[in-house]
Length: 150
Image 1 (cartoon, rainbow, N blue to C red):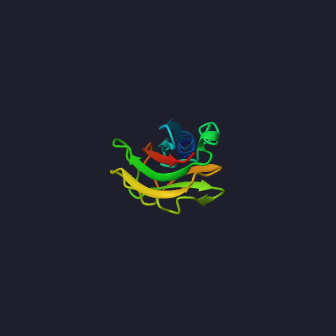
Image 2 (image 1 turned 90 degrees about the vertical axis):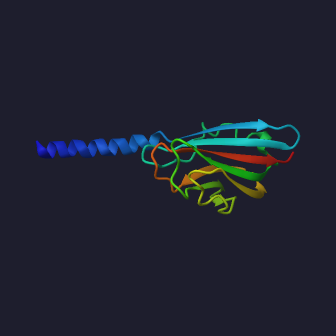
């Protein structure tokens, strides 16, 4: 009986870890500010185990459409959630073909304060958003990119 309960406990722990990872999510929205300015807002929520998977194609739907073509990232705001804050010094990356176009400028983010990075770089052709270093289950935050260009 003791061995049976041990196996059930291991199964439940593995199941929680697997299903927890499946619940990480990203939500994207954008605002055309008129003229040459627009904003891209990315809200992320960690899984129960603290991991944040890369956005799925469905979550990124529309990110590669024409309104991001010829845009440059001018500023990046990272905003931790005030109720379920991420781990201090978590990192945000925005990769294009495996290379962080922000060059590490959004590493070591605050768990309590909105932070701003001024960075001028082209918006990626195939953007891959990433959060690493978070250990808090269900933590969340927002990344806002200020974009300029035609």
